Length: 206
Image (cartoon, rainbow, N blue to C red; front, top):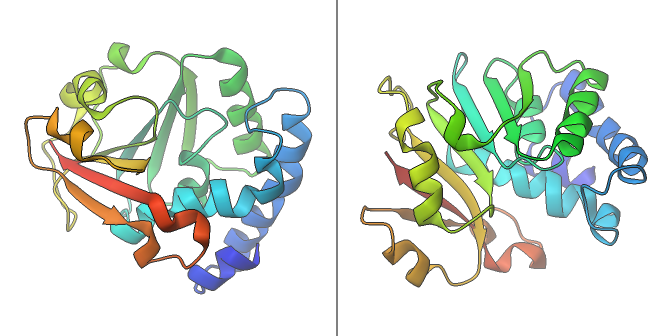
């Protein structure tokens, strides 16, 4: 929790309270449905919450923004981002029903009215979003194919509408498969912990 305060010092009391509740909520739910690896539950705030919030260091979401989180798993990056941006709308999707149930229960416990969680494959969606976020669900080329038709033309952020994807390691070959310009932001530029040395946010305008 101290990590969140360190890198996001301007949080409201309500936001701090919701972030503080994540530990107990995920520890409890993870014992029933394994949405986070056993060793990672000990480092929830660093490897899941703060990692998710890395997207916010690249682009803050304005009120009314619609964001799609594909392959959300237990709710990352969507849940932390929804706490940080309470006036933006988040649609969290995953093909695995038990994971979506955890997301729904966590969102309800935190009274996150800006979160909608649904068991559905991304390719089936027909809604439009300013940004699509995700965390290493698949290689970038097939991911682009899944969501390219769901990007709104209504662009009003510093970055043009598109994908903000949490990735790690050497991405040169993978990004070369996508026949369009992408931008890579190193999370080590924003966070000092060793975990973030190889972690990145890939931005792909669509």
